[in-house]
Image (cartoon, rainbow, N blue to C red; front, side):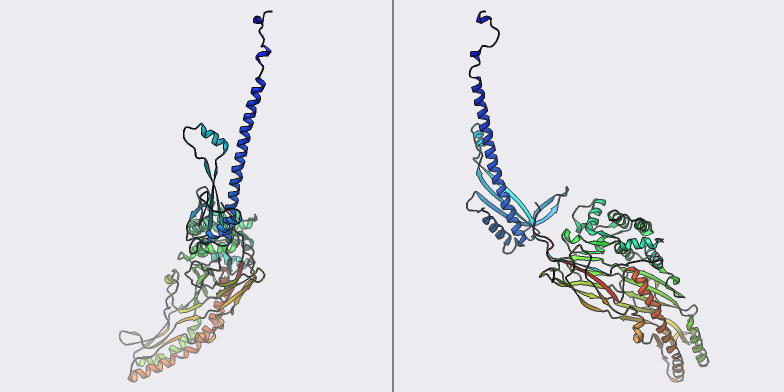
Length: 620
């Protein structure tokens, strides 16, 4: 067959094809090898820069470098970079060190904000200019615009310094157990303070008393529940949040599923004040330094104490009060009202280096119990015989002088107001030589009591005034003279007491306190006499106010005799009050107020102290 007629490829036309493919393959392999080598070179250089930046930021932060004053942060970072082979010797290398703060953006990512006056975080930026890759250089030969032969590589690192020492105080641990009697009193007290009724069982109260929640988890969940900014605890504590929401979040983060606790929380949530949407600020219960790291929030709170604080804050912002019936206290002829004037602060945490004794300093680590006001109305019908005796003794003399005696009308009642100022404790010093020898000192005061006896305006008492005015005198006998009759024209007697009781103060020294996050330990007590009112003794002196005659001559002489006759009441009334007020008010202090987290003569303070809670860490 003629070659021109042959339809298949000829062998001589395929010669050299394998060589062309081999050349193309070798060229591609060479190009890929250049890319790998160049990329590896740049990657290693970038990784080395990141290592230098990381170490410089960590060292500057761990040594508590600052950008103000001597600008020690830059010095520490430069020394670290030099030791790691990065020396700023020419214009191809640079390093920038800045101080500032960390915040979270809308996506909850950390963002560094430069601020030379603060050193909450240290940022280090290192840069090195190196030759551009060979592959990029070859590509630049065919580029219409000139491309720089060099490229600048940079690395950024942000580190936070070690956490400062953290101290925490707690005051007056809550009830350990609740029996049926206490449950009834708690239902009466808390329900009255919230303007409604409660019917929580002893098991429910015990569940609250034994349940604990983690404060950090609680605040994180609360921020999620109310759509607040995550991680901004200062703003969260200052936000008005409904008590119903606070209870709901507490129920959510409870580690154990206790049905009795859930029922108790649901019952509290249905009380008038809570159900109506009353809001409070958690900063009224938790005294935390501004900018406190999250490690300071990693602690447990007792649920009973937390809910008790909700009730106290809600009541201190209203004119509501609880009425305790006589059968609860076992006292006949007595009715008692209870009002919260100032809520307790359950826990305080912060840097003890910043703590001061100034009560207005936001850095003070300060806790207090609640300031409570009670108003007890006592039936004084037992004074009737004494008053009638005085009346019969002087009536004849007064009739000769055209005068008469006015006896306090029945029913004769006496108001006794007891203002229990809050006990308090604040950090005054600490040592952190080692965890075994660390100490914490706290200046601690028990409550100052103000006892007022007489006639007290109920509307003033139920207000939120921090100090009640002096009571009005309860008039027992009033000698009236003249036409028309003039009160106290010739004499008389009344009851009036306005007596402060001194507070007890000392410094509690805690040895080797537990770490932050552990149960407070040790718990130290400042103890006084639990029956403080009974022990007043002669402190009451003479509660009678005697009004002497103001007339001269025979009339004055006779009226002075009348006043002398009235003195017959002195021993009777003084003895009555001496045996009545102590037995009446001491149960009120020891039973009622204790259930509100207030111990008048005794206060328990627990402490925690972490000297070195963490090391410097990279955050960006």
